[in-house]
Length: 67
Image (cartoon, rainbow, N blue to C red; front, side, top):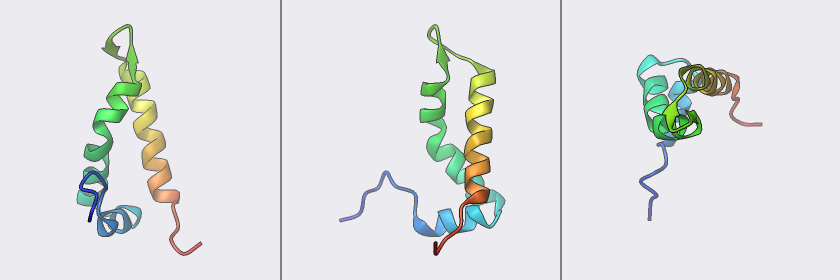
């Protein structure tokens, strides 16, 4: 039984190699969480949203398989 809430492995591999569509898929997948954790006084704080997105992108490109 597969968990449909998880990103496919292939998408993650492609994203770590820099494929734009895969990177966008990862960002879209986590968009809800990013917005949730960016809330300040009930509104999305754009600076916080950008900071979290930047950290996610950094983590994607630093990730190495096979460690």
